Image: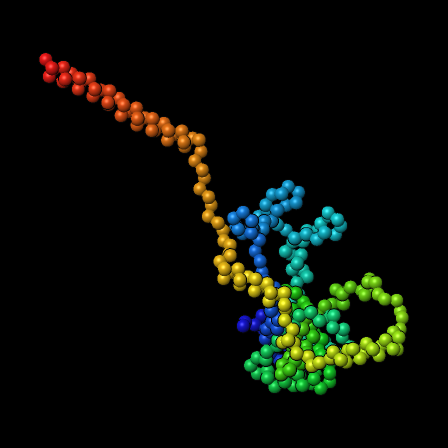
Length: 278
């Protein structure tokens, strides 16, 4: 697997060379849209809403809709004005207790692999985080975008987990929550007893995506039974009236030519017969 990013963890005077690798993979099955009549794949076109005409790439610009139906156009130089320099470093700003961070902030994990010369410092940071129960809060630029991120100890390694900024999260007050009321003592005891009876050791491999597995089985059965689809060959156009007329005329000409020869040959035969009779 290729690293998506290479750089270093930086805090204080410590610099640890690392490479980032995706820690998750997409499990969604991808489908193509097909035309029902002949199973031809359907492609998407860039079409203008006002007239329905297709727009080539060289005529497309980026616009921000600041009011309904009103846009401000941003050019390439506008983006360059706010472009953040890619420093190739995971700049650690602080260390916080993991228990104090709401899990809703965490977004996407990456494995951090130590590069040449960084093993000792890598292990030191991992063990220090584990011993203190803390994570490192950092900022990192991947490609052209800046992310908030956390560096966490993970088994024998370190993980970089991209995080949401606080401004990206919706306020819980926007949702209807239960009225403030305490649970009854007896009900709470029963609920805790039920939880205890259903508690067990965490075994993530026992939980599978049943919908995906069932859908894959359906696809495999269709392939095995030959129930597959591909673009159907285009039907040959039926002969038009013009083509039929040409064919009929050609036959008529052939027949008329043969008939005239027979008519010319007939008198000569009769002439010979009369001479023989004489």
